[in-house]
Image 1: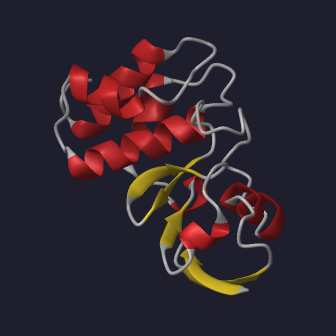
Image 2 (image 1 turned 120 degrees about the horizontal axis):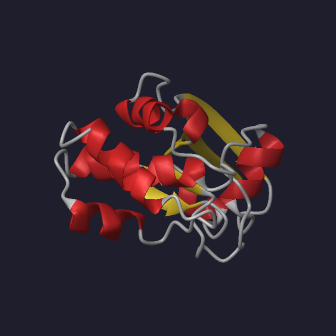
Image 3 (image 1 turned 180 degrees about the vertical axis):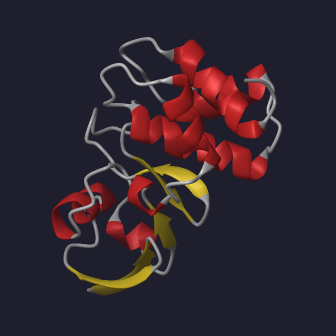
Length: 150
């Protein structure tokens, strides 16, 4: 079954198993390795990408569900994106494994809620686990990116 989708602004054609997780296509088929394999069940958030502007877990999204849609990975998020800038300025990462998923969730939050409060941030990033516990720096970076506080 041939599927088409747009990944980071480029039209792509997939001719494989429609049940294959989007994560494997991104990582193995397109060499876009920013989305990480963590739990494989959509619980940890390390594989978060945007599908039609909303955060989605690529490890549990079958290719057939991505057909005809627009997918943006961390590689496709503008380098000057305020969230990426704030992440660097606040020095958020410790080990860094979860950070691409955290950034993608934060970027989606700011697209829908430009001036989030703590509850908005916590709710939007609740499904992204940081084993290093940098949650306060993550929250600070989201606020900085939103211009709420620095």
